[in-house]
Amino acid sequence: MNRYIQITIETRDVPESDMLVARLSQAGFEGFEEEPGKLHAFIPETLYDVSTVEKIIAEIKGIADPYHTLFKTEFIEPRNWNAEWEKDFEPVVVDQFCAIRAHFHAPVPGVSHDLIITPKMSFGTGHHATTYMMIAIMQGFDFRNHSVLDFGTGTGVLAILACKLGAGSVLAVDSDEWSIENAIENAALNGCTGIRIEQKDSLSGTGSFDFILANINLRVILEIMDLIWQHLTPSGVFIGSGVLESDEEKIRERANSCGFTMERLMVKDNWMSFSLKIQSLTGEIIKV
Image (cartoon, rainbow, N blue to C red):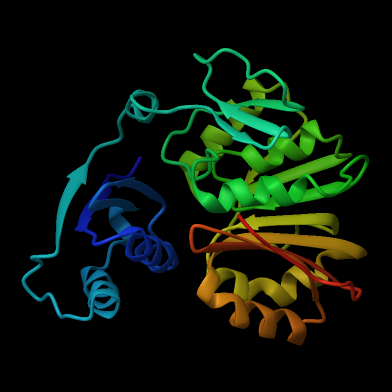
């Protein structure tokens, strides 16, 4: 496997950290660790472009940083991400609907769906606001006997939940090798071996689906929204996230141009998640 590069950026507050995550994810960064006053971001060595990082930091912080005083870079070898993650991971509970925990935690009582997730470098354990909201929005739909595509599956958590919700078929795709390996492991841990998990970076050849899930980033969502429309059944639903609340108008404009109507919008910690349908429905905005 390729080495990864970790950059560490000093951050002023949570909104600044959120903006950095959003912009860096658009630039190819695949994993993030947040702590007070710092953001750690990870990207394959082959995809790293220092000039892009400089530009993003300058735009968000409002100052140029040609001597890299605002961030530091280090190479990291593949390592035991499970051990790193286990140090401070606590179960995540989304209402009484779904809990996400590690294998070493006891089952969470009082929830409908208890998922076991152990990540490598993959995105999506439920701690991040976007994953939390994707799960919360999924709660409002009937997945039984429907076909589902999880595009950019990461740990596989959304595909696994769709399986637990009774989906007739689930295809999970991701462009990252580590994510594919991790999703396969997590699907097995949760008894969801029927999920098809494939390494892909496009919707081409995937088929037609009743639900498409995509917790990715603004750039990719805007680029592929017309293709998502083409791969949905006539009454299909697109549930997406990975974009900031400030990008709502961009999502609405693109959705409208592609023939979608926004059915539901959810906001948490400056991030937003949404569901789109081809037919027109009354929208509902929820802030949490």
